[in-house]
Structures are given as C-alpha cells and as structure tokens.
Length: 156
Image 1 (tube, rainbow, N blue to C red):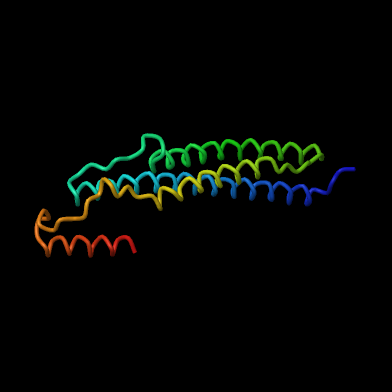
Image 2 (cartoon, one colour):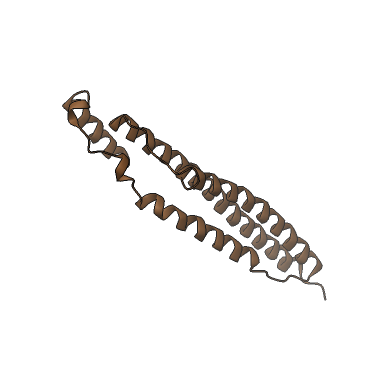
C-alpha cells in the first residue's frame, strides 16, 4: 500500500528538521571548541603578562587539545548527520523506515566525555608556578587597577 503524498512530505520535512538540528549541534560544538582553545590561550598570555613567568602546561591535557577535539568531533558530526539524513531519505522513499538510536548514543557519549574533560581544565590551577603578584614589578598602581577593572568587565 502506497502512503498518501502528504504523509511522505511530512516525513521528509521531519527528516530535514532533524538534519538541521544535528547541523546546529555540530556548529555549536565547533564554536565551543574554538572558544575553549582561544580562551585557554588568552589566560596563559594574561598570566605571562602579569607575572612575567611562563606557564607550565601539560602537552596532552590542555585547553587547546580539548578545543581541537571538539572542533574535529563537530566536523565528524556533520558528516554523520548527512549520512543519516540520506539513509532516512531512502528508507522513507522505500517505505521501510527503521529508527536507529546508535548515532544518538555515540553523540551523547562523546559530548559527555569531552565535557567531562573540560571540568579539570576549569578547576585545576598549578599554584607552584604562580607566585603571588608583586605590585612593585607592575608598571604603576593606577594602570594595574585599570587593567584589572577592565578585565573584570570583559569577563562578566
């Protein structure tokens, strides 16, 4: 039995909406990855500017690697979304659609893992390489206060 045209049209439109939701998720992953990588770099440069000492970072577990991982996974998710869209398209056309939760579980698992890896980056501080700030080494007290005030305004 052939389904009415209106039902097939709705199914295809739902498939397209699902694809666009996956696409938005991928774009968000890519944007979040770029933000994490750049903000980590900003914080390191700020630390060096204030303390005049280099920051010790892990070569493997750092914000740049986490950010790049999110960007790569976002790109992979775009490919998976397009593949799934095409697969569902042909299943609708043949009339034998079968839902699959595999991609949902994969996406949820990877985002959970990458999100969990960001927690230590936010909470971990290496206090051994960060001595207390000596105000005598800063250019001038008003300039230092103005810089910190501006920085707190930006980060709000």
